[in-house]
Amino acid sequence: MARAVTWTDPKLKALKLPEDKAELRVMVDAGLYLHLRAKANGETAKHWLYRAQVAGSRRWLSLGSLDAIGLAQAKAEVLRHKETHEAAKKGEADHPVLEARFSRKAKREQATVDQVFAEWIADKRLGSKRKGGAPVRERTIALLQENYTADIQARIGEAKIAKLTPEALQACIDAPRKRGAPGAAAHVYRTLRGLVTFAINRRHIDGADPMRGIENPRPYRPAPVNAANDSELVALLTELERSKLWPATRLAIEFQLLTGARPGEVREAKWGEFNLNRSVWTLPATDGRKSAREFRVHLSPQALKVLEHAQQLESPNGYVVGPEEPPPSPLFHRRGIALTGAIPMA
Image (cartoon, rainbow, N blue to C red; front, side, top):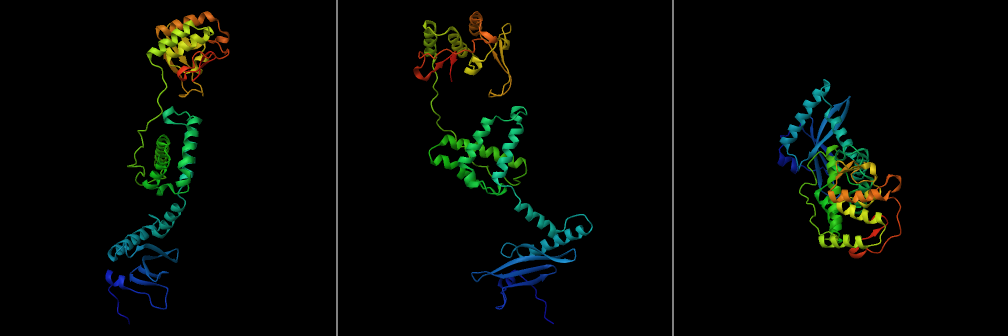
């Protein structure tokens, strides 16, 4: 009878395949085997296997390579699996072989970046905490999709989101920087930051945040703001007084400057939105407004004076300055300030 071999790490590493065999399983301990397999380059791959019985059938569970796991650690792994096996017999745990099978299946079924991005966008359409549960504007969603299509999808769209690396994410951000578009790089960063945060919250990513350590490419130099200074505003108001513009146009221009409202908000303003006794203009919540919620503007004495003059116009249908728009005037096209119709156009 052959004498039992006392295995050690050096002996296992020196173990070779017989010349007539392409693979071989060598029993090292009870339930623990070393699997030797010939590779195409002539080397021998060596992996640990745990042998178990599942429903009367023999099953093999890989524990890792000999290079990564030594004999002592392999024995400890087998002991742990045996304890789990005994618990499985009592219905207190899953069999380790089945558990490993479920784990492999879960990894195969991990969501791709494309799939999680679609889930993220769908979630935004359902509602956002930042907007009090209201859906995100379609314009915002269109911008996110534009950023994703331009610099993210082709690079990592088919990758498993759980396996994203900082290097892959940084490459997406660097792409617009390399073509001289630092503003687009900042937008790509914000899109990725939102997407990865969503993936973490939905358990698509269980490990470390792959965006950690990646800096927002800001600051970048945006285009100069085309804004009038105080002296230019005084000159504008003086020209308004001397002009032959339609009276509602003059009042609308002045009212917009005094309140900071948008052109469309001034054009569509109705008397029912104003409480002149409390000096408040309440803009109703509409889908077209950026915040999509009710907004209040406190009126200065100068703004109230403009409204006092507007009351004398008797505009139809309850409008403050009237919905009609006369032919545009070329008077105020200097320095990029374009005023057409009843109010200045943004």
